[in-house]
Length: 95
Image (cartoon, rainbow, N blue to C red; front, side):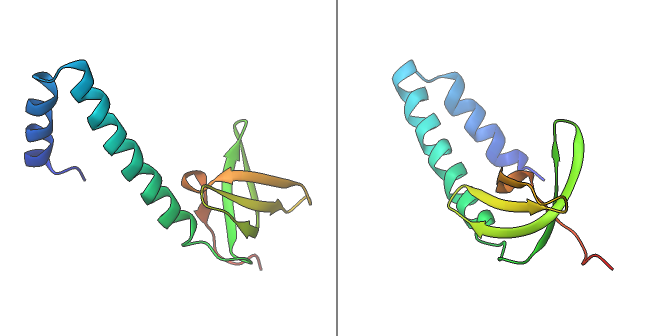
């Protein structure tokens, strides 16, 4: 849940900023977003069972490889997919 107090402070900062400052703030946010994506990606381990939505269809599979920004998943049908870690959800082991 977002921290409203910090959000209001950021809004004040942004509303009075010139384009150069806005670009600077965006770069800071982009780098933090990437850092959190990497941390989230590395929370997955080879062999983890995951699911994701591709072209509107839920797919299930197993993590084969973890990269900085993507995770390679082999679906239950044997197809490899490179998926952004933010799109993955852990699922319980298939019985």
